[in-house]
Amino acid sequence: MRETYIKTSRGYRWPFSKGLLVESLLNAGVKMQVAQSIAHTIEEHLRTRKRSEISASALKRLLTREVERVLGPEVAARLKSQTQSFEEIVVKSGDTRRPFSKGVLARSLEDAGFSTREAYELAKNAETALRKDGVREIDSAELEKRVGRLVEKQFGRAARRRYTGRLWLAGELFVEEEPGEPRVPFSKGVLAQSIMAAGVSPDAAYRIAREIERRLREGGQRVVSRDQLRAVASALLAEEVGEDLARKYELLRAIRRTVRPVHLLIGGVTGVGKSLLGSALAYRLGITRLISTDTVREILRSTVATDLIPTLHTSSFDAWTRLAGAEGAAPSPELILRGFRDQVARVAVGLRAIQERSAQEHTSVVVEGVHVVPGYLSHPSQSQVIQIPMLVMLEDEALHRSRFILRERETQGNRPREDYLRNFPSIRLIQSHLLELAEQTGIPVIPGENLDRAIDRGLEVIVEKMQKVYGEVLEAV
Image (cartoon, rainbow, N blue to C red; front, side):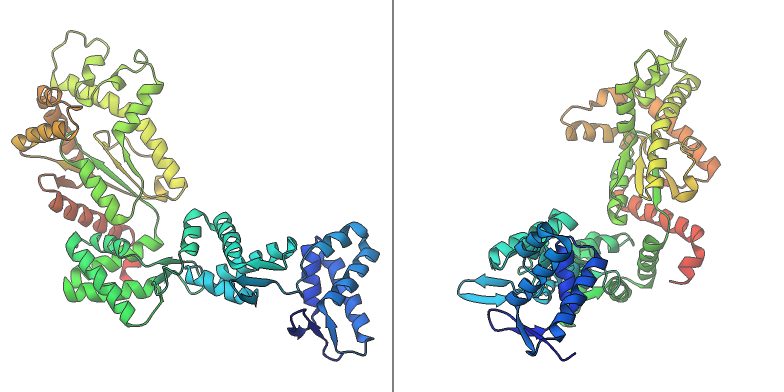
């Protein structure tokens, strides 16, 4: 068959293809096998024509008649109401009029950080929607809105904002996992966070992140792979802060992408700084779930009556007062620890459920609180995660007391120091008990006097655990 061309009303010509007919028929709800049969019939009809050119409108009439003959008037009317794949859609922008192009739209989507595959899929879906709606002419602003709604439907509101703000992103750097995979805008903050996880100070981490961005921009790259970014960061870390921290950075990056989720368990009595340490480590490791055992206790309190589990409805250091037979008794060390262990056992039920759910969802989590006690937090899905326990303690009693005064100020009196100072001997007793358990079970102890040093030690504990669990992986880094 000689080449036949389709001519549009604006004078554009493109080669006839059965695929264009099939695409139009599929848009009208015709099944593939039937669509291919109809397209073949049209192609055979065109073979008999002497002319090598057919107008888009004539081809549409020909196709509509064949569909009506084969499938009836209802399907033919639906097809006729649509804009066919061989008909052009005109995009207006002021006085300018241009044909709609999937390629142009896909490139604008790539500029917004979508992968090549995602961009072309979105562009294709946008065109299909326009043709099904019978759009022959559309204002560029309306097209922008339509594509924005489609982006939000498929990828969420943040992706839509990225698309509508793509001109602002012109020249922006993007990071992709693998060629053709989804891209995300390069972020100095995210990069600095990953550098801090290796033990670099925040100021140095942001300075290094800014230098990495400068080098990438000078290199003229718009898209950098995750591996390339890691290599640049590692090289600069080696220059700026030494080989050891660069090695630790590579190690943490490699593990973060290849291993089981991390469950970081931080125990310690009230006032030692475990909440601050938990937040700092979660931020540096990119862990978004941070659970306080006090929160779990409050939830259990709201669902379980006081007379059913009395020890839940008080503080950990005076839970002994709610034990059966303790009324009027003196607060002996044995009684204080028995009350503490009873409360821990109750709260552990909720903590185990949280850990098991996080393991099943392959989610990392930080759990911190006085109820993080050796022997109480095992769960059926423990083998699916890397569980890293640690205990925060304060050796200096005077410093420990002063923390309660500071807490009272920070909470505007909602956590008055009197309760804690009155029960300070019980709090210290529980700390001694936790230290004994940590020593017996080999759990690392983190001094809580200085937050920066506590963070450094916490990161060391995490890396040491990773090395033990994933020695073979780390050798390949």
